[in-house]
Length: 158
Image (tube, rainbow, N blue to C red; front, side):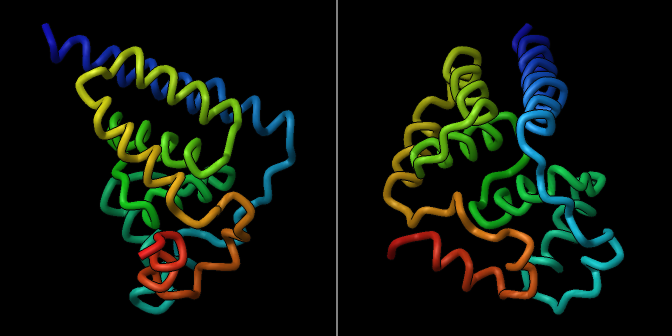
């Protein structure tokens, strides 16, 4: 029974983010088009964010979506997986970090309501976002040649 509920939760979460939030965002604001192909990402030096994005997508068998690359970059830099709880943790981090948007709010609210067994993780992600340097205004596509550990250090206040 619980596995059935998890499947429904996953379906709803994907629907909310990919079928509702992303199209709404494309209409409201003109997102910057990702300037690289998947093959271009592979050419970045090992250890850079661009190269890690290539392997992140390849490992998960995900397509490079031009309007979604920034989101995938955040998964890498924040160390949240693409699982249901990882998606909600990423958005809880962003909320704590001061980024309030439709996708962030809808994902956090959904996570709190539908995934109560991970509330503690969500709270930790939110607090981590509050205690980290602001990242909302980063120029994401200009970071691809920078070593990933360097960028992670810039986010976290150690």
